[in-house]
Structure formats: structure tokens, C-alpha cells
Image 1 (cartoon, rainbow, N blue to C red):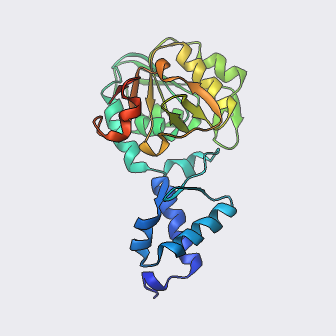
Image 2: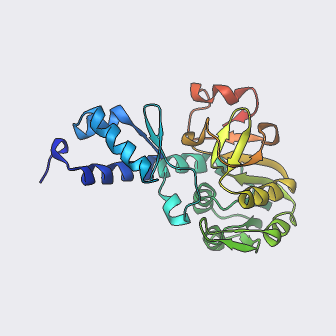
Length: 253
């Protein structure tokens, strides 16, 4: 069996893909040390993988490509961070009334950790999140309806927007493809951002739940300015310096 230092290119790239799926990012020096190869070797691997459309190179490593991906594939990315975020969000979910969850796997993690409630309605545009919510005692799970988005498996379009805006929510929990301290949150498609804006239009508070790999980045379609967000939840300690650009614009948890 090959040791780390004698791994072939295909084996190294399989490890790099796995790391990218788990963490959403790769630090070149860390992976080179882990695999006992030179930084130049990893750099070549990352360059080749970028040419194949598998990742995007950034200073010091690489990050996942911001593009639509199936729910099951997205669920495994940064799973530990999503668990921390879900634990923080759980304290903000009421016993009754109505809340909304978007079609993100971060919202799905929140749904999967939600305990019994006393007459809480939860509206979502994700069939996967809808099914998960149906198993929770005291929760009424509501699906918006709409057109199926084949890449992300969410519901979008006019019917989805109308369904999202037809209930009054105390809180709307949403994620994002990227968050920028100047432009706010953004998505991989206009259809996704439109449904999220419809949810927010009927919510007293919009709570943005994103892991730290989404920070300081931009996607395609703008969803919310930071002024439109009541709370920003990440897996980081709110005092973490990575959150400094956001501190003056939004409350951090």
C-alpha cells in the first residue's frame, strides 16, 4: 500500500476532492504537509483540477466552485460547521407560530435538529426539508409549491414566490452561496434569490446562516444587503477577527 509521499496523481486528487467536499476549501501548505509532498506538487494538482472545472484557485489554495449542486452533494460540505450553526439557530425557533426555512442544506440541518414544538408551522421551498420536518411532533410542514430547479432540487418560480409570501413569519432562516461585507449575500441563480426575497418580505426577521467559507466572496444574484439581515450566524465565535468586516453592519451570533 502506497504511503502519503508515494501517492499517485489520481490518488492525491481523490483526496483533494474529498477535502473540498468536506470543508469547502483547501489550504495548499496544510495539504502538502498531510500528503508529504511538495507545495509545487499540490499546486500542479489544483491547477489541473481547476482546468477541469472542479474547483477555483485562490491565494494559498482553492475553494469550491460557487454553482448549483444537488442537495445530497451539498449536504456533506462543511457538515460540522452546519451542526454548530444549527445549534445556535435552534435557540431562536419559537414553540408556536410560523417560521420559514429556505432550500439550503444549512436550513436542512436546522430542520433535522429541531425538537418537538407546540403548534409551529414551518414553510420551505425544499422537498427534502419538508419531508424532514414532517416527522417532528407539533410541527406542521408546508411546501411552497413551484417549479423544480433540477440542479439544486429546490422549488422556484412564480408559484414558489407566491407560496413563500403567503404566510406571516416571525423569522426566516436562510443561507447563501456567498456573503460580502459591502454587497451582502448572493446566490448562484436569480430564481433562488427571488424565492428568498419573497420569504423575507413576509418575515419579521431574516436570519442569515452561513459557514465561514462563504464569507468575503460573491456569487451571481444579489439576495440581501446586510441592512436587510437581522442576525448573521456562523460557526465562528462572534469575536473571531474574520467577522470584523461585518461587525458594524449586522448583529453576530
